Image (tube, rainbow, N blue to C red; front, side):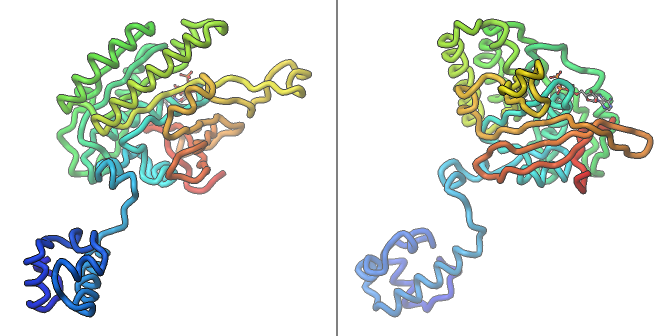
Length: 332
Ligand SMILES: Nc1ncnc2c1ncn2[C@@H]1O[C@H](COP(=O)(O)OP(=O)(O)OP(=O)(O)O)[C@@H](O)[C@H]1O
């Protein structure tokens, strides 16, 4: 209030009325301000204009940020500027992001890459903390992680990170151990500030192996309790959660004739009950064709935003190089 360009008379009246901040002024109507301060209508107009000019110097913010605080507007970089642009900066910190795709699409590669970028300081798109990587299916790809670490082109001010020290690996072979991991061990790591990213690779495998089609009600119950656990962790600790998911083939009458699903007709596993639990759904496709980069070649991929409250449906071509998943600048 002291910095507003106002006459000392108006400033003193505002002080007497206990209007100590710009926010206080803007919360009242002109009439209420007049009643509180005893100032004339033209003085009140000056007061409101000065307060509004001061308030508009800061950037507009969303309702989500207003209710959950500034941290919720932060993003975790994917470690690639092209893919970050597609996602409006990266993964939202408060919410569950699903990454679905066929086998070999590059989902795990992206998960590993995020385990490194989360450790970067905030001014390089990270969250300055570690990651917990929960494997429900395959062994954790330690060798590939080492390769990614060795291939990183680090900014000059990141010298002291050893990366592997801050990645906590969990293997959960059944639903019960996954639940124990999420309800006991992960909260401890988050509460101690040791991690700011949770990756589950993959969500579908346990639900697919432990429940038959006829157990759909029980499966849905477990699915909802699992997703609410992830939501709570994400909200309580302002932590991005990445769930890697498999896909199922979508058969149409024409594909029945050809004895198989069309390669493009796949949808994320676990159906609508799960789809309603995620904030952002991404799909990674492995396309026909290859791209080259120096002496490396890679199958062409495409990362698509299927839905997200803050993003338009869009996509970028990408490739997996030894240094990780990279979006291609111009779509091939
Ligand atoms: N060191 C590497 N250099 C280049 N490309 C690699 C390297 N390691 C893996 N890839 C690429 O990544 C692909 C495997 O990706 P990834 O393990 O992420 O698949 P995924 O989508 O997680 O599949 P799944 O669901 O079967 O686990 C390989 O087929 C290969 O094209």
